[in-house]
Image (tube, rainbow, N blue to C red; front, top):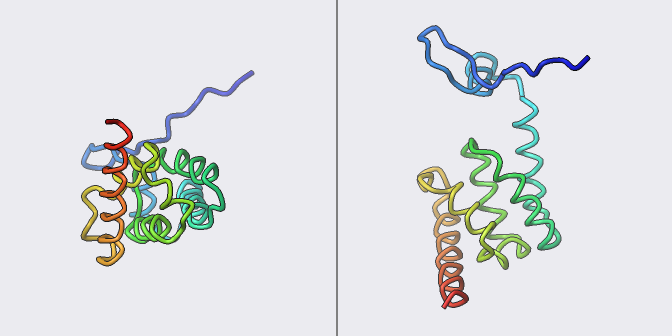
Length: 135
């Protein structure tokens, strides 16, 4: 007999608003590291250490499923993008470009300034390459 799936993604607060379970635990029990947070951190390390284009694509696909990144995680993602050639050399690939553009959008004040500027150069170059390939 299969157990029914329990919806544990959101928690109702005293104000009646719903929010993510991870946010609830982060606020109430900051010492607890949830499995998803740990998985995110491992994937970011995998991106930084990626040794092939295929591995980069695989890690980007997995990271793309997450939407909430801490400031430290955003900075680690950007650092990986600019320092690991297995990432920066394929930044114009649609999945890598979309991930980096999307994950950093609106977070420029959270990302170290020199890394932000370098990422913007890489993304601009990628945009130009994608336009050339399309036209």
